[in-house]
Length: 491
Ligand code: NAP
Image 1: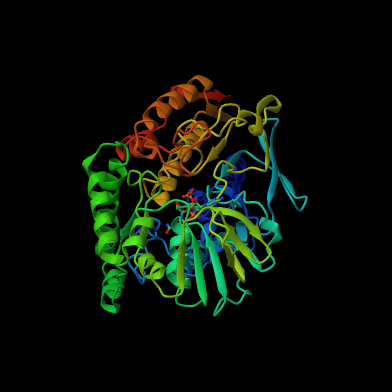
Image 2: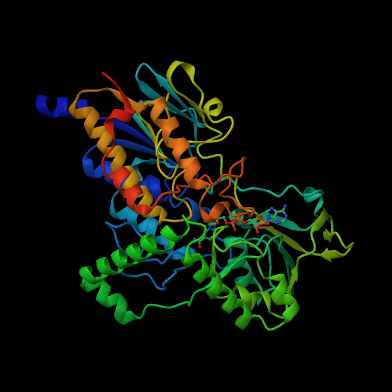
């Protein structure tokens, strides 16, 4: 190695990436391309994040597959318009191989502490490994820590019980009595897949869902061959889906009174009226709040599953769980062999329970003691060179999460390049900028469809949606060039 090479190598910043899911892999690919040194810390034994963890029957991505792909690594081989989870997991594993990331990933090694010491981050893991990095990219996801329902007697159930994101594949389901608590996006997909398999499926619904019908369209061999040979067509498909998604639905949810939400309600109502034959069942499934207030459920088989002769929709509230099953408030005991909890995630955890300690001993747990927040969803004052992908206030229900992460990462990379060019050691958002953004964001969030009076995981402890409440155009423009005056720089 020449002296110039050695100096160049020394001046290359080093990055710790936390998580080898969709956004962590993205960061690794981009840092590799830029020639930077990086280590990915992954608590599990495989890449894939949510697609590794969620293996429940019926799992698929309800965002079109040709949109739910990296823009720089499109996949001509998707089998369906909305492909099954196993294919998405395979895609992330293939991407990992194609970009030779594996040797940079420390598997089975959860980060326990990140501490800002002498102008660097000391990153420590559960195995006792410790190393210093100049930058940290937290790519830990939002839907990450399963949420268990606060129902009396949950632990007393004598059958098999597990969360939808921790599916126990050793448990036999065929011809057994299965209870399913929750009818969010996970519960709805599980219902469609399990109904024909089990002896009885009792679906415990607390709140009815608006269900957007979608056709399960398979791509033909010919279409896949065309995508393989004509990359422009593949690119066009991705770009067209992106435009229709971002200019359509993503904009509609920002205004509670928009006619597009009326259209969605109309489509879902027609679907309900046409698909559900029994009038009593239809009324139980009819929501009483604005469509898209909760995260919209998209399904091709939920109504089939719910009308299957093996299925019973239970809307009487749950009183408690007993060794033999679920007791509802009408005194009825729904006897079960297996209980599935599709009850969602603790969405305010992000990188926690890691101990993250910034300047002058500042703890992220203290900064976020009321609720998580972040300047433009990426940075937190007091935590230099620490950036998040899909962090607090990120677009969660409106834009494609992959596209969001790509734009956020390119924003962070601009800050890194700016710091290198100017020989600044570190940067973090100004407190004043973060407060200004959060005030404006909170006010805008109050006018979105998410704040029209429903219970959902989009709401914070005050009942204010925590997601990005501005149009896609604003997100794109904010991410395209950091406002450097909103940052503190350390020389
Ligand atoms: P979720 O949307 O939070 O739904 C949780 C469900 O559990 C709700 O039906 C909720 O009822 C019910 N529940 C929670 N506690 C309960 C209790 N104590 N008693 C009775 N019912 C209870 O969780 P999820 O279905 O796992 O979905 C989370 C998110 O993951 C989705 O919104 C989506 O962003 C993502 N996801 C995406 C896909 C995809 O295809 N792209 C698939 C699955 C998940 P209430 O409605 O009354 O609160």
